[in-house]
Structure formats: structure tokens, C-alpha cells
Image 1 (cartoon, rainbow, N blue to C red):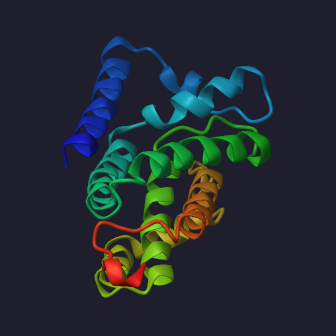
Image 2: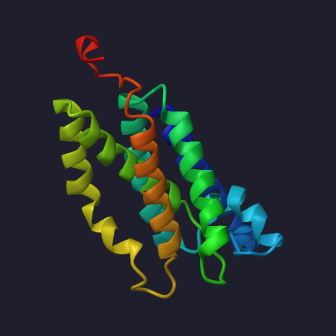
Length: 183
């Protein structure tokens, strides 16, 4: 839980600096199809608009990050970086013209990866994790639809799509709970 805790701490530090010094960091979000918006692919997950936005990303980032580190220690870095960059690239390519900020794309990527991995691998422990992810974060599904104008449903959608794709791509790499006889 140390690395997910550090990441969440960094999110909070960025938010406190932004609010305390009035830095308007939203400028470092993804603004689709513009050269200036490219930097947002890297920086957008660290920027949050308000305290609710930060809390809504901090708790799942910590819980899902911990689960990812515990069950998939060899894949955790690839999944986080993939969720971060691939969802950001797709948001830059396809989203509506507005600033897209927050770690939601990464959070959706982690949730989708954990859920899909549990189903694809057909291991009891991982299927239980899939059920837990659905129980805790199943309502996230609604965030992938354009229901609220201020919410970047595009980041949610592309994060989830990236998580599903990586779960399929890495389905043959053993998890930490794999039975060696199943490999």
C-alpha cells in the first residue's frame, strides 16, 4: 500500500499547492487536438478541480492501486502507466474541446483491469476480487456516459477501455495468487 499511498499524497500536494497559491493548474489538463493540450497527457491526472473531485479519485486510486500491487505486482507499473498514457492519448484524440483533468481515467483503467482480469483468468481469488470491485465501484459505469457536462466521461471511457485491453493483453502473465499448476 506504500506506492498507492505516495501517489495519493502527491495528488493532495498538487491540489493544496494549486489552491493555496492560486496556480490555475487546470491549464495543464488535456485540451484535445491542440499542441498545448499534449502536455496534459502527462499532467492531467495530477490536477483536480475541487475537493470532491480529489476525494472521488483518491479513495479508489488507493484501494484499487493497493489491490493491483498485491495481486499483480509484476504488472502494476505497466497497468498504471498504460492507463495513464493510453487513456490520455485517446482523450486528446477524441474528446470534446474542453480541459480534461483528474485521475479518473487511471482509476477507471485500474478498476476495469482488475475486474476483467478476474473474469479472464478464472481463478477463485481473482473472481472474488472482480466481485469486490463491482460491489465497491460498480456505479462507476454511469461515469462512462455523457450524463453530466462537467464530467469528462471520455476519460472514464478510455480509461476503462484501456484497462480491459490490458487485462486481455496480459491474461497469460501469472498473478501473485496463481497456482503454478495452472500455468
